[in-house]
Image (cartoon, rainbow, N blue to C red; front, side):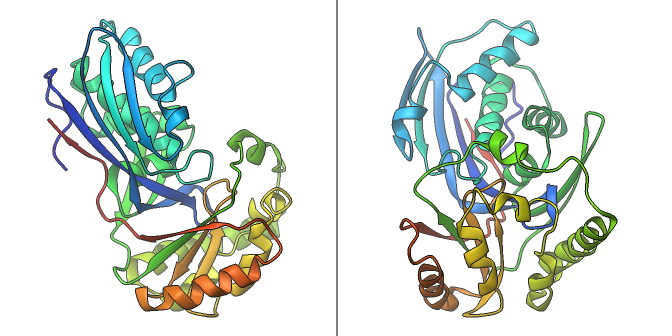
Length: 308
């Protein structure tokens, strides 16, 4: 990754991958990067402007209530820097509100813009810490920043991350329903406490999850992606999930889980060759629900990229 830490105020280009977090039991702790992106080109200007294309372009181009601009401005003010207006060109490939890490990519983009144009001099650890603090959890931010499969934990402000390159042959099918879901709604539906049995089951699955990705253990993934902490409660507002979970172990499907807080579902397939059969099985299982979009993706090993 080309460093985004050099203090200069020329044009900045960013490419930030989508991410899928939780992966079943890794609630607020595990995520993987995917190969569709938020791409931004920014340079100083007399006034703020955004020329957006791609997914949700109309929303991305709004100057008011814009996540990236709001965080960019706030970071500069909080660090006693002048707010430098930017002309931004954006190509967005990450659907908003679908559990694909759009907020993590947007927050990281804002921090990188502030670091560059405000000449903050933050290093990689500080950038990830700030993004995780804004997100409220480190999983999406770490996967977006570093790429690959990550597990992460916050101790105070510090973020501690373990990262591995996921198996090159595995593919992801992100099953996107027509309508987004507010993450706050998906979090509000969860209970405040859990039984010992549910907690132990998730610890066991999460322990296997990291090894399954690190060692390419397809045989472990079916067990490793089981969850009893958040998915059973979110099925009511994510109706694709209960239909897709039973496909695990069939048609080349190694595992399935909500993508982040939903409503999208992440399906891991054993190889590129298995994608057609898996896609057909997914569409069959969802018969009667509104037609989803199936986004085929590699598991991205590269993290956020910044060039001048």
